[in-house]
Image 1 (cartoon, rainbow over the protein chains, first blue to last red):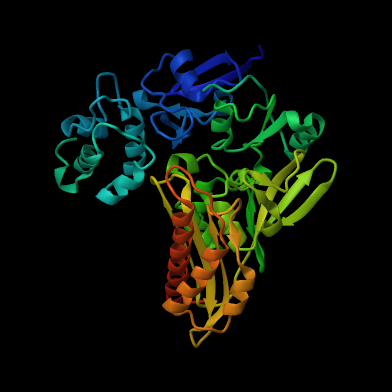
Image 2: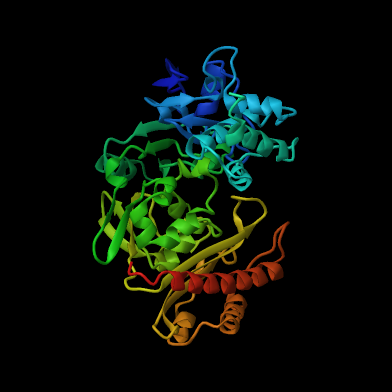
Length: 161
Length: 296
């Protein structure tokens, strides 16, 4: 079995591992690093559950081999909040607005919404729907997810930081 | 759903990548954004024994332009084209097509070249490249560089004129000059970002009196490759594009389509959809051309 060495920064920590080239980045995060916040859904780029940030851009971690991310920086859902036991604004809004039921799509949804509000601090409902169009949720009908993002980004609701 | 084992090489430069391809032949496969190839490998429809990664080759990521042509490197990310200001002016149809390609997460990785060489019959970028009259620059170790027109490049579903030792290095898009140029792209799919049941694209330019000076259009998802209709387009020159005329032409195009049926869409519906979408993009492009009085 051929292996390759990779060094990948995940949520600010540098990890060096020997892996098979065929290992996808999501399997690397979950199986090698034990970061099981990122979920594996369809494994062929359709469901969005495995979304992560690679060098600060949202991508699907099932559609890239870990070896390709050598030398790059990954942020997973575990890295969205500032500290342990804390929630980011968007994570908090997901709780407030019941934007999850089973939670399977949630890490991907959070990554997609996190990226949306980074570029569009006060999105319209339509912009939120476009931003999460690549993520499948079978529980919420998407409405509460849209509500959560609008709640988190409401310019009048700045008090719930 | 795990890819079969393979060896991996990250190419240092284009020469290195082409050298490996030349030696390994059909055993090796180039990987760029991987947004089609990685799923294909996960499902084991593709099982290359050697993967040559060209993602970090800066020479394939350049965008340049002269008076006549804008040249886009094959490894330019779809997302980078989407937000490129000068491409928005020189090749607006490309940008419009891209908003229908997958999702932001896939466009952040997916490249223009990858989508073209994958050649899905319903994919947006092959259709846009045909409508724009793009030409593909293919390079190999043995044969050097050659240029293939988009019209000769797409040969069938997932099948192009590229040989297994060649790499698509750049795409040339002719720049349309003058005023009153308009373009439009639309499609219908089961779900946002899915492959289209049918798609249509149009770019046109009008004369001072509103008649057509130039027009190019095509449909995707209905035949084994996207198709354009240069003869029909030629006959439209100097005529005004009325809604009735657009529908007439679209109906003629729809007759020439030969779509298949699947679980979701019958052949008849797909053909009718292609005609409807084509009439729509023609009129949208006309409207767009009226907004573009200023010189490009």
